[in-house]
Image (cartoon, rainbow, N blue to C red; front, side):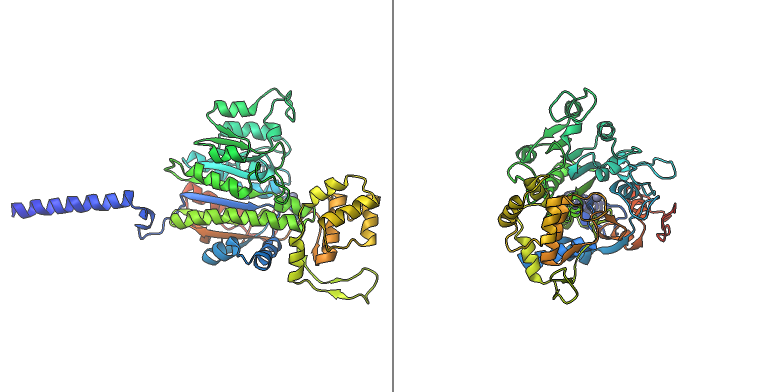
Length: 490
Ligand SMILES: [Zn+2]
């Protein structure tokens, strides 16, 4: 009996070692448990700024027709995960800006246009990124806008006015996110240094280095940089449109995402939360530049694909959210008349040919406007059309508008030259824009992984923030669900 008991103890001991060992060392350790974990260890928040459903669908069609490629957001995240529709309005208007929208998504409260991390009711709650950091997760911000721009800032800063850029950068230094990648070196340089926009002598790059950050200023340095904490500033102001980007020097959003995953994953036990934005879906839409929007969205989707690969390795520990803060421009392929002269004119329908035509555009409309300058001549306009818009025609009324410096509409954010060229592209491809500003269209939320179900259905953008906060806090008490019906302060 004694011997049998001893043998049983030995067998149990060996079995226990095997079970614990296989849990700790198996590459499938996160698959070993049958119960679905409630909270994600790794959280990706992807934001295509200003990109509504039409931006997504246009890029999906373009990928299919021009490159015979799919789109990870629609083909993987939406098909394998869940899809929701989200309101975007702020507290004080029907249509939002990025600051109020990102504040709602980062904190769960309604904010006024222009507010960063501060609510319309006067409170200043912590953001999901701050709470994640407190809970031991590593945190990062990635954007091709300036790093202090409204959307990333609303996840890690608190200022009443989004234009308080120096204060936002100072708050980043205090908070110490593990990773900051983007443009906007101008607010990190002391005032006597070329390109600086600061009003003080503080050298923020030196201050970050003093706190143990490695620093990268171009694509080569980004590839070599090592964590645990990294500051990457890849241009003085906003980073380039994908069509104009110097691919040797400046990293794309997907390249920054690749580096971010590598750095945040290194030696990381508790997990991470990373916010990844492509700003040029918004900037391109303000300029009614469909080619730039598509190229920005394609790179954004490549970044999503990297997160999807990560999810496949850690399916029971990862949450991927792909969404936007608002729609910009309300674009869409539509019916149009061949000429503006009368109702007898032939109706034009959009076809695959139009997507291929958009594919032939080699520069952004920002660059095209820079080439023309503020006072274009008839010759410089003809030259631009010949060099960059082969197969496109410029109607006489639009040429006159370009020469007269006439603003083609009353929307704000209008660049007269770029928007005129945008109208030229619309007339040639049937891709028209509702405006050059933000619209009140709801945006989609695609979610995959742990907690994805919470983002299903029709929700207010404050619910997005509340769900995310509950997941980060490990608190699924279910006190969510505000009425998304109307702006709260109207
Ligand atoms: Zn915008």
